[in-house]
Image (cartoon, rainbow, N blue to C red; front, side, top):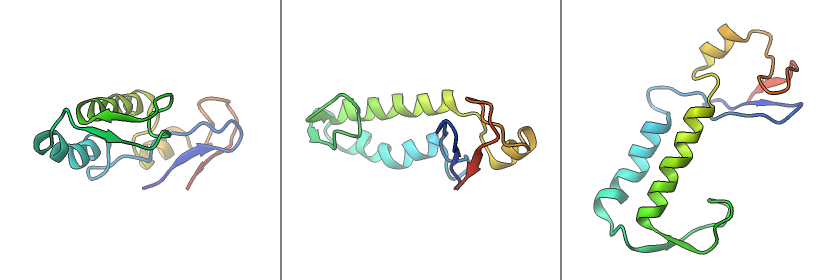
Amino acid sequence: MAYLHCHNCYWSQDDFWSESYNPITFLEKNYTPKLLNEDLEKWIDFDPDTFKGIKGSLTNREWIARELEKHASTIREMKYKTIEEFKQNNPLRICPCCGKRELDID
């Protein structure tokens, strides 16, 4: 996986996607067991940094729903799905946010 970000304005996007890594496979792998095998009304504690502005605990149902919403946002904001697409469409590495040639891949 590779992480694309700007050194000037700090714009970034999710790691480039592939058949084995993308929001759908991530959600399926990590949340299908919880969705199918756990009590959806069970309250769980979580790190406050997970969902900004929420403290304390959520039900499994709400946790899964928020994860789906978070990944929907990732899909909406993704500029370059693959590293090949990035190299082909932006060979000068110009940031889509600030317009500077400061994009970097880690």
